Every structure is written in structure tokens, then in C-alpha cells.
Image (cartoon, rainbow, N blue to C red; front, side, top):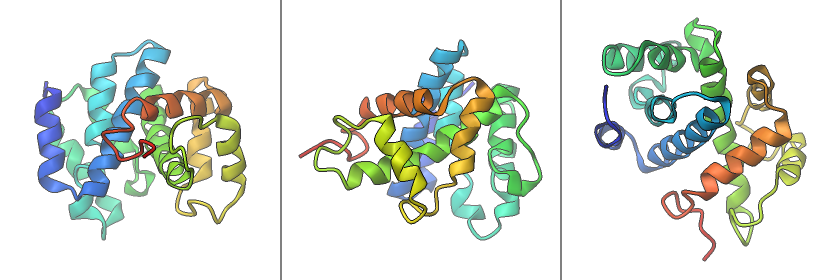
Amino acid sequence: MLDRTEALAMIKATAPDHLVVHALETEAVMRALAARLGHDPETWGLAGLLHDLDYPQTKDTPEKHGLLTAETLAGKLPGDAVQAIARHNEMNGNLPQSDFDFALRCGETVTGLIHTAALVRPTRMQGMEAKSLKKKMKDKAFAASVCRETIKECEKIGLELGDFLTLAIGAITGIENEVGLAAS
């Protein structure tokens, strides 16, 4: 299995800075979800870190997104991690089935909402609460590209929306310096 150092080098070699930030945030959320749900944080974290590895090559062909990464990582990550990566983008024809699949989908999607919310707050991540994110979710113009329905898939893994948002906020707060979201 790849280790984190190798995985991080892979994503940094192919992705622009904003995608590296997204990968790091997704990794943090996935590690927190794994710990909460009783799964392996290392495997779930690596899936989060690498889920968009092929995005620079597939951004214009979304029906291939996730599939190229799955091919690249076959034999380098456990099979369920490779499947979750292939299934995080249903536009490629692979629908989510397992908790891992749904966790990666909602875990990577919530990062866009949280990151955008932090950028408009004077205290950035500090003091962010789930209730304020729930309000932001109702405003379709805020972080308009973030699919609210995918975030709500957290319920398919047994987490109420508020609990999921709290967990994700905590995970990203833990890496706020690394992803440029610390208050100045």
C-alpha cells in the first residue's frame, strides 16, 4: 500500500495548488469519518487525499473522472478504497454502494462549503459552527457549485447533518494552517 508521503507527492506532482488544498481537506474529513465510524483512518485518509488525482486530465471528460485514478491506484490501495474513488463521481456510471463510497462523496463535497464559509469569516475556521453552515446551505447562491444533496448523503452513513458538519469543521480546523484558513 502507498504511504502518505508517496500519496502526497503524487497529488502535488499533478494538481494545481487549489486542488492540493481540496485533497488535504478531504483527507482530514475522511480520517475523522473513519475514526467515528470504526474504519481504518489511514486507508480512508489516503482515499480522500487521492480521490481527485485524475482531475487535471479528466476535467473536460467528467465521465472518466475517478476511473483513471482507480486504474492508477489498483494494487496500491485496498480494493474498497479504489472502489470508493471510482464511485465518488456518479457521472462515470459507478453509483455509490458502501459506507466508504458515501463517506468519500459527502466528505469531499463538504470541503467546498466549509472552505468558502471560512474565507468570508474574519475568524476563518475558529468558532465556525454547524448551524451557520446549515444556514449557508439554504442560500443557493453561496458556494453555488457545492451540491447540497451530496452533503446530505452523510445520513446514509448514519450521521445526522449537524453531527457531520461539526465533525468536518473539526477535521479542517485541525489543518487550518496547512490549507490557508487560519485567522490572521
